Length: 496
Image 1 (tube, helix red, strand yellow):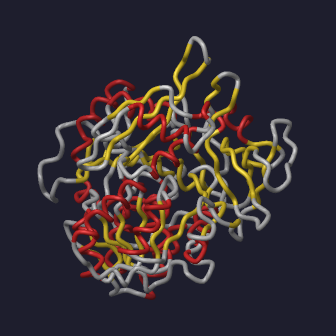
Image 2 (cartoon, rainbow, N blue to C red; image 1 turned 60 degrees about the horizontal axis):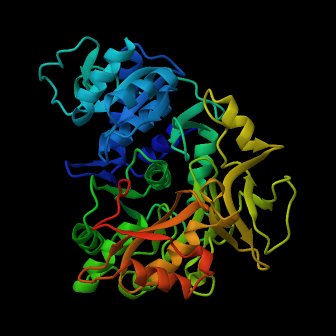
């Protein structure tokens, strides 16, 4: 059971069906499989051997999909990195994760060149962006992507791939320090793809996914590969543009999309201004943090009632799922456990607690990562007696629905009282003048830590620090109200 086999099967079953479309062109399943075979054989031909680690710095383009499947077929291990990383970040990853080869797009080539000079990297580097026959990059060991492909065979690679072989090292930033590398075997990733189709309303060969989440992050990558695993079609976008998204849904009868909360809010602003036909959507999934209740209400009104929210992470995989019919009467919940997950709430002593009691969420199952690469400390602190310790705080209600309260490390200790910033953020997000809010703790001589709110106001709105503080005091215990408020035009975000 390996990821490469799924593409070969779909090329036989759906040879003329559209597999991938990006802003440069499109590929059928037969075409995609042939190019993947060319690339898999080419990577072995330029000196990469089974189990070698290959860093991938590509955006949302068809070549990114080709590389992932080629690595799978060649028995190589992928290390997807953000193509916006700088030389210092890339060089640290090359050294720590024992990288043997690199595939990069032209936009990241300068940073990659800087990185490899810092660590005296000797492996092959394949650059996406040049045309076949164009002069090769003027750097030793560099190759044009199309050139290495046309020189290799299109036959299925002969590498023997087992389910227990490593497929990807997936970067997860965690909350502090150097990024950790979650280990995912072929078997685990196949099970992740199977999970996309379970529950009666999951992925199928009839799906058309519009992917606006970055492929370099697992949320976007797992969604794309999950749909291709089942013979669906994916439409790739390099950047999120709400008008383009709505027009594409309407024109191409898109059935599936995943959105970060800020993207969902921007989509609602555009949809409220003009009517679009989004009736083809049967699955709108939150990517990242949960949707705010007013976002859910807006999506139901203007986009689709078919909203799915889950509790998931790169490390833990998917743990729970909240179905469309549960979005209103189980507001704030992350749903019930999926078929593959076990979970419970533990106290600080490592003992399970009853329903309704707060504690750390722990889970186990086949979708949990196989540990962290070269990180004994993280493995020892994150896994205990077969359970993965998520570091998140939450509780189960009497009906078995999971509620996530916040990160264990993010708890603000003010006057020896534990305050959860997410609770205050939820209150602020309901304020009619507030567009977005973030709450943090800062050191304070008297309180130990003080609660600070950072807010961006909705268009045309004005407010004051005192108004915000009094608003929170009227809805929360007084000690939870911010001690200070900072106003920004826009809050910073990771890429949508």
